[in-house]
Amino acid sequence: MVPPTRTRLSVLRVNVAGLLRSTPGALRTYPVAGERLDLGAGLRQAAPLAGTVRLARTNRGILVEAHLTTALAEMCSRCLGATAVPIAVDILEEALPSVDLETGGPLDLEAEPDVLRLDDHHELDLEVPVREAVSLAEPLAPVCRAACAGLCPECGRDLNDEPHAHPELEGDPRLAPLARLLADEKE
Ligand SMILES: [Zn+2]
Ligand SMILES: [Zn+2]
Image (cartoon, rainbow, N blue to C red):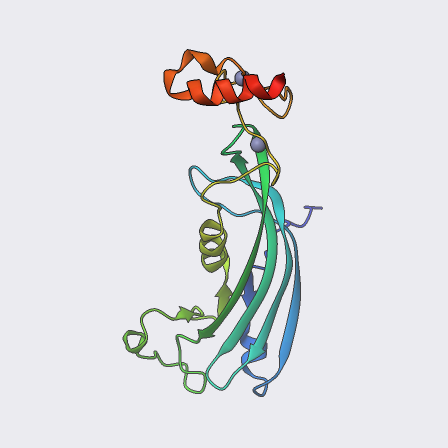
């Protein structure tokens, strides 16, 4: 007995031939759990992809509505610590067939070159749009938490672990008036 080969089914790749035969308005909802994306160099998922993909038959094709969450492995821009930044992406895009549904003949794809297309077998591949949406959602200055105190600009120690201040402001002549004020206040 040869054990059956297990092909990993990805919900980011769905054959919608059946849905295309349905009347406009027909809906399919797919839960997404545990998906891993190949985000390329420099970007790493810190949590699997989760959420739902809803597909609706339209007059021309399939309306894709996806709400997905994951997390990206990032470095906190304040304390430089490793952190997982939660990411949420929403996708709303119409996917059009690449072959005529009646005749099976090719369609003029050049007429709408930027549109999401099903393949010749009516397979919808959401990997690319999801990957792009996740990449775009990457924050420019990720923080490990909103209240991260960051590193001390004077000595570089982590102010979250060791909250401290450096009162010796006298060293800088520009800060001398401030130092005097602080000294007055201490009296
Ligand atoms: Zn931080
Ligand atoms: Zn310091």
